[in-house]
Length: 403
Image 1: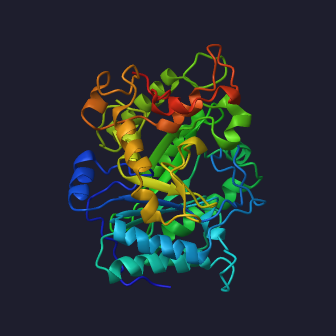
Image 2: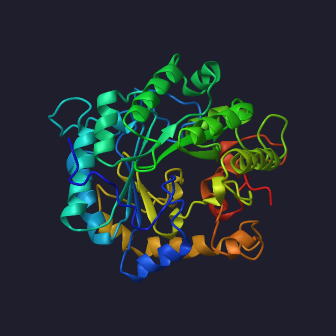
């Protein structure tokens, strides 16, 4: 399978980290002025996954059943074209094992079919597109790597630790890191990491289990031309059963604190400065301060059809259901506009408020909303209780931020 153009066009010069990171406020403002009503679209093709990571927000595993149909995704794509979407992000579970009920092709090929379809439909309409996909890498063969390269697919790939024992424990599957490294070798062999290739980001969650080895993953990524994306993981999905190794804004004996995140990001900035001549001052819990801007114009469509503001937003903030409404109807609803207005104004007493944070005042960071929501389940002693979750905390301060 081959796309119509060999080389990707990142017209807006967007850093294709997850979460619209790199799509700055000026780009968002200009695109909206040009008529774009939706800028970024996540499509969770399936909840099924070959791993069962103990921090997975989607609680993905081999046993999960939720999947979007091929015809549903193609309809979503048509509406995305009309809405002005510039970034399409394919997600799971593990998207490479997506096999919808209405797909009569070979196992493992539905994903490549829809990616080629998306690429070609945007080219048919002469619309710019940045296409990115999450993957845990373990299922990527050399042939699949060649197809991904031919389709100009930017990738965000799992890598939490270079220690097999630690990585496999986080994956919940023995031998997982070995399979992932084979996948990385295949991607490298077809050119990923080179400047003329679509970008590849390594996605590293931060827990107490792998905290001390993140610098090694960071160096490994940079040295291969990959973009390391380090995310302080929060207590969402399956992580609720492992809250003692995750992030908490409350003082505890076992969880990660904002100061732990600060120390880590200072080390990573030093590695970049001294070893790779990449200069940035850690002012936010985001690598190179490339903060998430999803709330300004993106949505996530889950494998059950529910549309939410971002992948980990609670059901309370669900915006609609594509199995009951069209995507265009959902995006045009007063609920979406009201949500974006609330989101941009955050709580005045929040450390993420523009009145209290220079990065927010400069429209460079709004923190992570789902981290704020998930942190509301911790009491002042650091004990996690899901019954304490407060939907209004979605607009509170980011617990990963040390400011």
